[in-house]
Length: 320
Image (cartoon, rainbow, N blue to C red; front, top):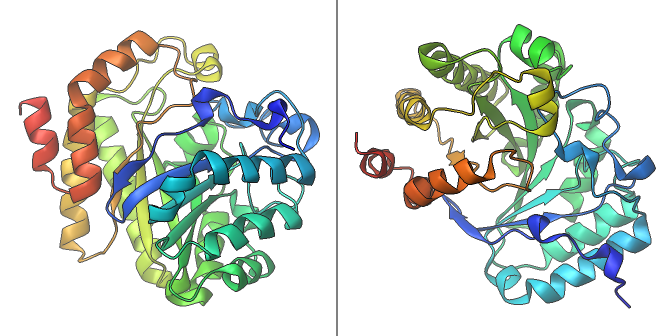
């Protein structure tokens, strides 16, 4: 029997969208660490409220119930899903946050979805190990592949490790690529980029986003790892507002300029990398009224770009 406590809040029940791979569906599971929090939440990641979890601790039993809930709630959507994303407010590859039993149960579901070609799983870099990737690869269907969502955010150490307090060194990032590279086309990396990070605006923010994409493409080429990019315009969260109260939400005109240049760099390097504008929100944006206005104006363009990868979608919706 599914207990009410394991049913996600509405903000964590994401509606399906379409990306370059087809129907894209996010499944959010509970974190099985102490208090249901990401272990890094209290002393890292100044920009992120997601690590606070759902206000309760989970275990294998409660996450099994959530999996059963998703199978019922998303029954029709799971059949058609081409790209599944698995989150747990932290690292899905950390056994303390997602037990091996929960991990296996989720991937057993994924492997049985005939239309699902890609599953992306969120994780910090230190959990990208041969043992974890072996288990992941073992559970995938023959025609399926996986990608690890890596929250690099910025190629700039001062921004990533200093301002954002994401204590992820470039050596650790490169080591993660080296490990994933051993799995050929079976496993890749989704590279998260925060646009207009704290105390960086205007042309500097545009240049920083392009440089971060170039950094990801370089590692992709060096280690022969397939890569895609998740582009997240900055918004004030509870934590980031406390740390950077005067830093504004991302200027979307600048964001579109950055995306145009990023798309050009992908094409120049003849990469197969896809770009995805991450606009879905778990309710952490502290300026929901402004967010609603932005989505009213730009959502059609966001969705069209995510689906087609055509820059004209952004040009038309923003009246360039």
